[in-house]
Length: 340
Length: 212
Image 1 (cartoon, rainbow over the protein chains, first blue to last red):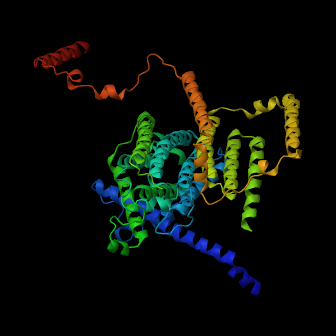
Image 2: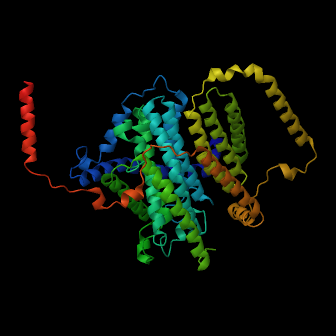
Image 3: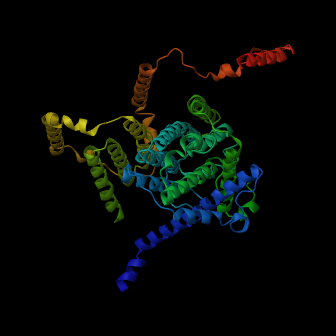
């Protein structure tokens, strides 16, 4: 018994348990946010289309996400007989895990970050570029035509838009002078980066729409032609994991936009009174704002045609961001604004 | 205590997945194992304190190169049995190549080379390793860096010239042409004589009667 208590109070175990507690403190609110994002999406789009949306289950429909989750859980998990079993099962897990691990480096407030790594922004970029594997593996392992076509489209789209996303991130890194996300936020103390880098902000937002396969770039799951894209063959919990992963990715991308361009946890003005509201609240408000724009775009724009999507990515965004990287570097160097 | 454990985990996984790349029957599984081995090598870099290299490995190899790889392998229609046919025939050649490689590796490791040349060393110092790489990459190794970029550019242009061909009779959308169209060249307003329509109608009725 004594050895047991000694084991649990040893510094290593305490540190381990503290880390686990931190992880839970991030993931639990995140999953609740994902659940309510699905509801918010249906309600917001409903209101924009002059109808009510789900408002029956619970007050204002607030219990709807839980009803949906229960329904999904009670369904049967189907493994198609022609599927490559292991890959088929791993794909949704991969998508979901990748959408969660990225949150390790996002700072929610001053010092409120699970892992304050030096190359935080590169880590985020690397994790978001891995997201494509979940899609490709699902599409291929299903051994069916629609998922395969959906996965091919998605892979091509995600690779194309990652290029411009990377170049936008480079301009932000140049302006902030650090790869650490906390430093990037602190560099925005005087002015949020979306003001001096406004064109990059717009391109970044549009690229995140493409990266998360959201409307108007939701061709991978274009229901009118591909049924539902890469997850046609999935049911029950494995489908739910894709669904959760997609929405968690949306929140992650909004968090990234907030951290890079909207000053992270910083209040909009550098007034002492605004610092009374804790950083995570500001962060959550900004993320919610970006998410609202995500939904707004979905309700108002028609879907792109595939060649137009590729044209936008390679022929417009890529040259534009490339020129802007050079321009930003030149301006920073010429006016002696380079961060030390 | 935890760091060595992770080293053995990553190292073991790198080796095992590397082995699986050549053992796996299905080429797509091979590529997936290749990705797993890249991923674990990135983990090894992190343990060495070279987090910048680790992330670069993830972004470049795992995030971009391996995706294209997977893309191509998935699209190919590979018949596994057909691939196995030449196995016995090519076995001696393969064994010879493998043997030569092993002998060469043995020669390197038994040579008395100073250990710092071969062993990876932990580089974490006062500067972050991003800054350290940056400070030599654009000064001391500027020429090598630019030449490497040039080689890639040549390869890219080569690939484009090899595959690009202009086919006749393919309809393409040229957005600048579409946007520069004016109303005058697109819409034509014609004033139609108003008796024409009833006359057509009468004609068709007459034709119907004749048919009956």
